Length: 214
Image 1: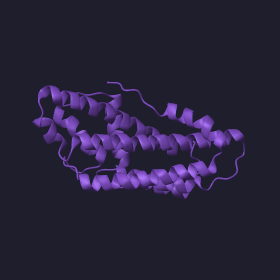
Image 2: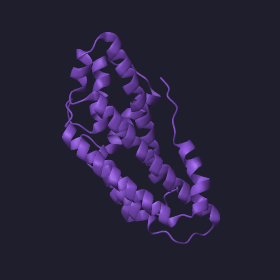
Image 3: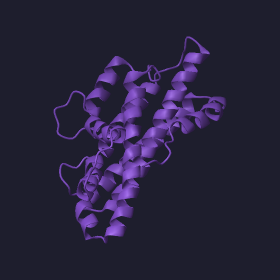
Image 4: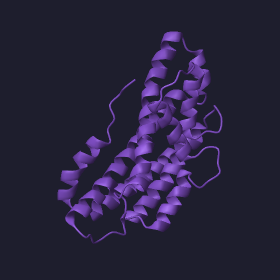
């Protein structure tokens, strides 16, 4: 997930550096708000994703099975809340890019590239679209899951092909993703006014926060 998100960040950043003129102030406001929402969704994905990976360790299923029942339940409850948020974030992020006009500044060529990165046009077992759809589906249609199945969702979120996580690789992916997000933030600061940041950042932050819910 982290490497795919990094590619999405890079492509969106390329797109937002292109816009200079707008047909109306309202159009500019909507675009800036969308760019800020996308930033917060991406940042929350990496923050919570990294937190979840650290708690899960190399072998999420094995770790859960080695715990006392009460400890396992508490751990899975924390992880489940994060996973549900991650599914909603990935779903909303795809909506901002493809389903709405908030990021219309991205040209068709870049949108096609982002489609490939997300996984709409790639024949792979694990894609960003597949991860997001899997997590979002279980969020909207809760089903009974065993402890092992819940633990495996951490590996799914990380983009692992099996139950085991390559922590060294994931740590490197997270580091490069954070660097890309910082570059994204700096680009946004250069192309929007201080007034826009002041008035729209709070709204974007509020609209991308999800309350904990079982």
